[in-house]
Structure formats: C-alpha cells, structure tokens
Image (cartoon, rainbow, N blue to C red; front, side, top):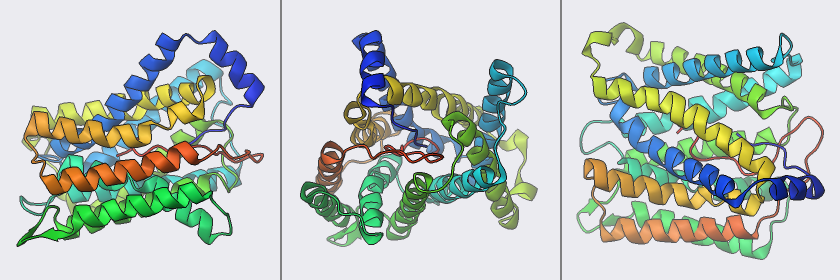
Length: 334
C-alpha cells in the first residue's frame, strides 16, 4: 500500500520530533518482517492449501485492522463513498489476489518446480522498475538515471532466469508466475495513486484486504482447495507461519511503514525495496538451506543495484485529492 507523502514543512517538524533511534527501529522492523514474509509463505504452504492460506491471512488481518479502527475512531471510522470503495477493491484484487496469490502459487509447487523464497523476493524486487515502465507508457518522462536503473534491473532479471548449462537456476514456469505477480502488483500500485482511493491508508487497507481475500476465496474454491482443506492435517509449523504472516507481515510491518512515511524522509523509507530481497535470500539460505548459486548472486545483485538506482533518483510526486502516492511496498502481502 502507499500513502500520501506529508508536505516538506510538516515532515520536517515531525522528523525533528522523532528520535533517530525510533526511526531506525521502525525501518529495521520493515526490513526484517517484510523480508521474512517470503520464507513464511513457503512454510505456510507446506501443509496449507496455497490460496486458502492467503484468504485466511488477509481476511483475518483485515478484520483485526477494522476492529482496531472502529474502537479507536468510532462508528464512522470506515466510512467511504462508493467510488472509494470500488477503487480500493480494484487495487486490493490486483495487489493481493494477483500479486500475492501468484507468489503463493509459485512457492507452493512440487519439488523442482517451486520457486525458492529468496528467488521470489528478488523477482518481486522488479516492481519499482515495472512501475516506471507504466509511467513511461502513460506519458510520464522519468529521469535518465531512472531509466538506466530500469535497464540494469531487467538485465539482472534476465541473468537470474537464463538457463546456465543444462539447467536453469530458477524454474521457468515459477519465475514467470512471479513476474506475472509483480506485474499485477505494479499495476495496482500505479493505479492507487491515480484513482479516487480512501484518503486514510489504514481504511483503504481494510477494504483492499477484504476484496483481495474474497477474490482469492473464489479462485481457491474453483481449484477445489476448500473441499480438500482438513485443519487436522495442517502442521503446527504451517499454522505458526500463517499467524506470523497475519500479525507481523500484514499488521505490524505495515503500521511501521505508514508511521515512517509520516516521520522519515521518503528516500530513507524507500530503501526497503532493495533491502527486503537481501533479507529474504539470507533467511532462505540460513533457515531452510535454499541454494545460492553464483548465477543467483550475480543476477540478484544486478537487480538490487538497478532498483537502488531507481529508488535513489526518483522524487515523491505531488498528491492529488483523494489519491495516494509514494513508494508501494513489495513485501506487504507477499
């Protein structure tokens, strides 16, 4: 999700009132928790039906957030008009059903076809690059260095998925599935700053999560996941991973991210876009022994470098009334 960027004067006063220790604590929370969601997804789908796990994650997280907002702000906390509701629902389907759902499917395939969690994170890191392409297609003119970063990033993507010798470092079908997920996430992120969304990002998130969960439930039912679901067959390990995704990934890290947008420079906050993949690769290697080959290291390093160039050369755009802009997270919902 993304949020309105505060004005320079307002941000300066808020930054002055926020200690560097608090800002860096929140930033580390976003780095680690969002970076760890890829591994948590892999563990959750070991014994949980993949799309159903995403349904449970977003439905429960959305309901919890709705209850908190209702208790803190009163009866009108979630009030939006029909256009805002429709916009939030569209963005939620793109981000969570398309973006997250396809990543979950890519990580849940049989051995040899499933995409490792660290590789999934590197492929999803191309989202800022895809958003730049969407801007260019619609008539925007990004800075030259932004275009250089996009070129470098996509060169890294090619290096990552290109077959090396007799085998590919990444299962091609799984890689294409994650790229499709990144495309859905990019379109949702792109639209969220250009259509009439709920002004409050927390309220928008409630409707996005519920719409995404509903769309995922329909697809899960079509795949037969609901009929095949037997809670007793789900391991404790998978239940704990799902709970972690609900609380740590969708609530705690997102709250920290929104707080950072209002209390820290966007150039600092946006660093999550290239730190999260590094965290994901490291956790996958350390905790579940996911292989890190020279090809993965090279392709991943080139992707991260390209994203770093894009993030550091972009500037926050002016926010139009009723819309949201800023960096769209790659980790929330992943």
